[in-house]
Length: 269
Figure (cartoon, helix red, strand yellow):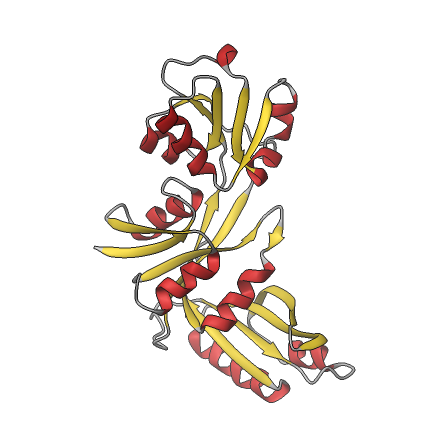
């Protein structure tokens, strides 16, 4: 059974994404931070890991790009997970019994329209699934949690109001991490990498102009800590033929100062 490191507690959205990618026959290793996920994979405490990299509403999670760079892990795949927030309570509790709602600050924000219609006290926690677990273990009859359907199932709670998030088309993209082995799947059609230019006028344009016959689906700059106001550029490339990717990668090598490929894998879309 594979051990998969995730950020958060069992029943969180990272857990759901892990099940979607690997199946239910996995052993989850909960970690407090994204950095701990990467470290667990790097040092063999977990076979693979899962890390959120961007959200369709909030955008890129910039610090996690730095983790990819620092820990020298390989991106082996990706998962696009719909984020569906549910209001859940103990099995014998009804809506009128609720006095307060507990969840992660982002989950509370995502459900603001629903919550504004009630006069409940809002309590922030470190994780959505942890809130569900807390209510179940403490037997809190006047507290509801906002969390995933899996969290309700795992901790024996009743979903009293499903999908209360304001924006229904809310997705998070997760990348699958493993120790670097340079292997490329035969059905790979996507690559994630970063490059560095000489930061002269037109250097970014020069790098991007060398790409052809391939789809640039993501371009994200993020700062180089040791070089103020200088940036690395993360890109995702999608292709139908591996030879097209290799040709474009060679072109990019000639137009940049530094390149590192995080991984070449099968698109999760």
